[in-house]
Image (cartoon, rainbow, N blue to C red; front, side, top):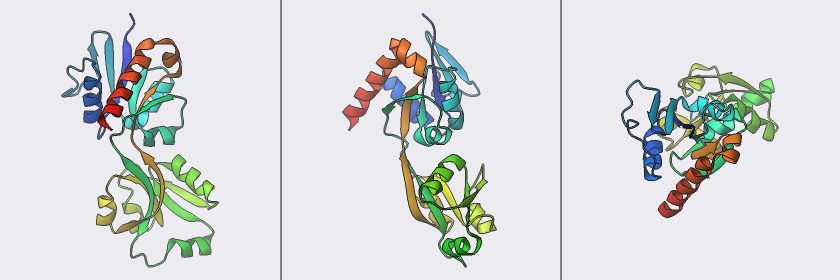
Length: 214
């Protein structure tokens, strides 16, 4: 039997992902404290610990058979994967935010220049949102603390994900619109879902766990 390759996202979703797979009956030995290891093999299972933004590429290109990934990364990458189960944890929301006490509103900037400058780590989601409302934007790609962009004057607004809104409030930003909700998803490579019963069985077990917890 070939290895079943599963990608797990580093960061906020990691611990819950391991817990979910353990509850589904998988041997997750070594995953709770992997140290610097990026690949852990347990019998016929091989786990890959991957940056969240890279998970869709690993799945769509067949590097792994299945994975747990935030909807935010899936929506940004828009790569062909099979979204199998909404796992329910890691809930957050994409929002548009601007300074609470801005000297000049984003509307005024738009009136004068004919476009808004928007900073985000998610340029594709940002562009699709503004296209949907018919607004012209210049997107500033930020890899780190996007909340700094309005304070430094390089953007009037930001698009980012938030769970509680605390970071926005601490940086004097207010939400002006909500774009979409995000939770962790179990996804599969399109070919693996069709040909490997283990992927489909794991999806069924995870779906049962979600329904039991509801």
